Length: 290
Ligand SMILES: CSC[C@H]1O[C@H](OP(=O)(O)O)[C@H](O)[C@@H]1O
Ligand SMILES: Nc1ncnc2[nH]cnc12
Image (cartoon, rainbow, N blue to C red; front, side):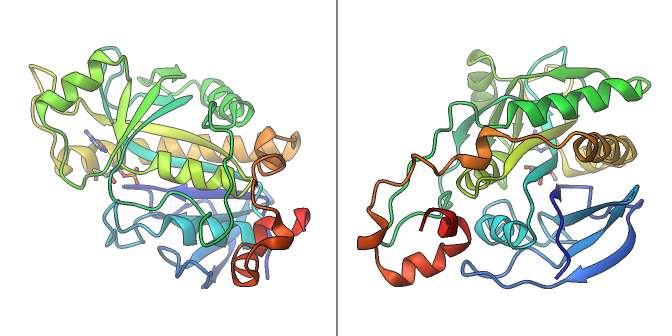
């Protein structure tokens, strides 16, 4: 099977990477079910990457239905060590304008209906998540954005991403509450993914593509899918340029992230006493500690 150190998870509006060459479609199974879609491997400027459309290439999965565990497991099977996530978000701040790019460094969890851990069934682990994205990868991503000098696009380094359950957008009261918390952007997917990536010891960072002002803004007080997709199409070209530049930078200067050893002090259950079936289910993550 093709191996790729860099994985790309594309969200709403980013269902493929146009610049990929030597493309192969790989259908994988995992102990956590099937991923959202086939994984597309290929090369970007000679570097092998693995691309997955988070909601499926036909966008048929709601945020709640996205098989986050299977997606991360599949990336790990391919040898992925760094994940670049591209995601559509609403803005919670006036200065974060539609079409801007944000590289968040914090998340707040407002999800209610999803499993966001690989642990359980006899093996307990608690990974550190104080810095939920890999700060080094986030810097590479933000530096890549800056180097491209994209017209009419401001870059925001850092900021808090509210991860809500969806699929309905927020109420105005919720949106204003999140603003009062100082959060910058809102979406429905990235915290879950970041947590699982951390448990899988994969460095993870988000390129957030601002599509709307959510519903708090007096002059733009309804967010619609039409608005989101319209802006995302405009953003998709920029997103692909940024991803390509980031891939180039990672392959030029691969680095060791603290995420790569996140499980070292996280597992509390003595593995020799843990159920064999669970050890097998988690073997891809645990093998180096067994
Ligand atoms: C189509 S608007 C809401 C939808 O867009 C974002 O998706 P993703 O994070 O995968 O880009 C948001 O999280 C919602 O799933
Ligand atoms: N306003 C919004 N709320 C949640 N997720 C989004 N994705 C894009 N815009 C969004």
